[in-house]
Image (tube, rainbow, N blue to C red; front, side, top):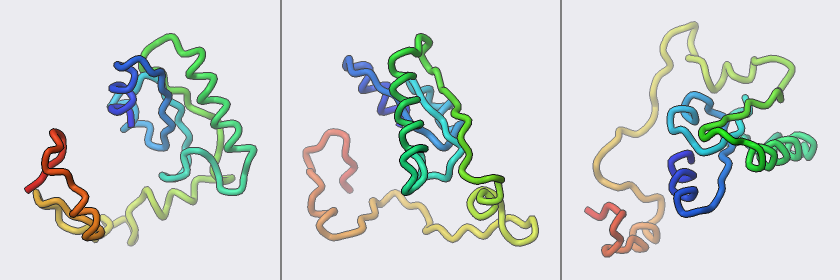
Length: 132
């Protein structure tokens, strides 16, 4: 998102990125960011928890309004749970310290589409799209 945010900023629109991956966010250097140590996909707060969602949105608005240094990332002192046990299932290898098995599909140079309609929607004249 930081790469997209920089492009949008270059066109005159202020941005702030929400992130749950601090090292990745820092490496792409967004104009402004807000980091929560929450699971990926939960960057805007806990489900059914308006208080955490409100705190994150308010922090994002505040960073948007006050950050004066490009690349500012505000780390919020919010906690997903009372301890970090939730990270065991998503951040650490499974199986007694052994490297977790990688069950992802092999990467190829050929675009993969979830539905035929997605493949059919590709515009061959698109200057930034890859069409084999």
